[in-house]
Image (cartoon, rainbow over all chains, first blue to last red; front, side, top):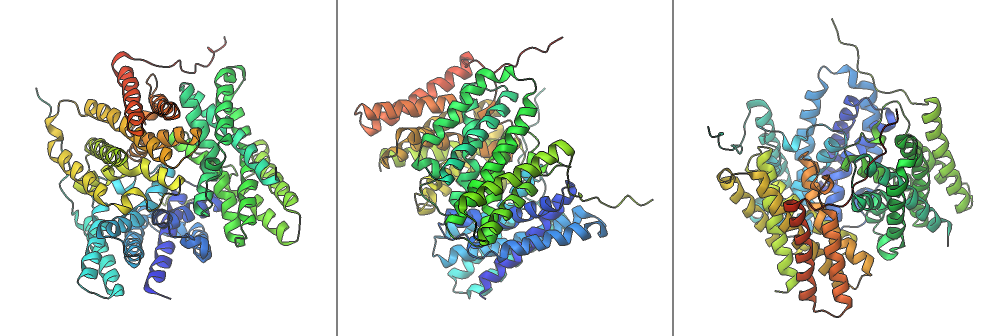
Length: 207
Length: 207
Length: 207
């Protein structure tokens, strides 16, 4: 199993957990949990594969991914009431899923010899779109757009790091690990210490 | 005309009616009706074809589908005021469209010799995604996520029935008819008698 | 550079400006601006290319598009406070972007010898879907669905004009210019003079 496949499995598993947690906040039934888990888990990677014309789509060729997502949703259905703060779990699991998925998307694009801009974009797409679909469908405020937090920025910086590392001749597995690490460190810093970029402020109203 | 083509036409027609009904609730003009009808009618099948890399997409190769959807939207534009409860019509028409579209999606994937998991997923995708797009764009509460009702579950069970029937050697047309029937019976039972699966309940707040 | 490429660049640039303006209304940071600008700028054309199975997707093969969108978002981030009414700018820029994107979509489908129905649809898709994604993600009321305004109708009429002109033997560049002009004139008329189609009115409530 290559590093890339491993990353895909890990990101599917963790994103599926976050999808199921959002389903628990919407009080869906078990099938609803599985639906949201699958949508979140494979959403970003599916868009990546469609954009890059990689067929079969990763989970169409390898239905294990779906079974993993379904298993994760069953687990959450029966255990989510045990955790103290589901929203906290959601946000932190999402930070891991984001990091791993950015690395997976970046790795896939690197292995297809795309240009640097496209590699970075595929990392961002794979990382951010699954969660975005989850939040739009369930009518949560998209984490992507939350003010005063780094999110897309983490994905972007992580993917950029991987591209630079690869250009400098690093091993693929090393570049991708670095990518996930940078992405996660930024996201965790933003969640814990409130790291953020300056946001756009419109001028104050004139009198 | 094969059973599969017939199912595609039927699902396009009925989903187009539901899309136009949602447009009537949003008080759009005739072109808005046609837009929503087309989006709803071909949304699920388009995603299915993209995921399975079936080109041309069913309606790109055969623009009749679009003309049918447009005709349906014109019909609704001029007659929707005649019905007693547009929401009731919407929900019931949607139940027929769902059943037929699940059968169409399942049939398409079966004819491509996909694995069982993928066939079931394609049925669910084709059935549920057109209506989901309709509801997200028009800001209705997605039927997919409505609490206390079976929806994705019906699609799932219908598609699963078709896969099992096909494995047991049933005729394709028979499997698909069974699929639509099972899906619709469950959905109708849920609408009429309140059938549902247990939903996730968070634990009661501690004192 | 062909007329078609020029149209693609122009529509990417103008749509990116509108995406960044919406980001400014949501008070995102610079990376959020770039994300929204890219989503809006390439959204419609990406769906068009996926539906028509044109690979590589226009911006995957030519990453300049992304750089243009990012440059536009940086420009807006630092200058949006200078304009009097950001919403006015948004709506008017969107009208230009719509017209140019409809022409680009129509041109792409014409050059692939698609049937008339599909050409018109591709024009509408390319023109309307980028803006729709922008508005759904940022939770604005979609311009597509705003009551009492022409929007999809402008795209539809513009694309239809181009198809008719092409059928009558007009030069491609001329057909596309006419398409953009008709689309923009209708949209501008709707914004300035309140042109609209009759909307659906449900019957008055009975006593």
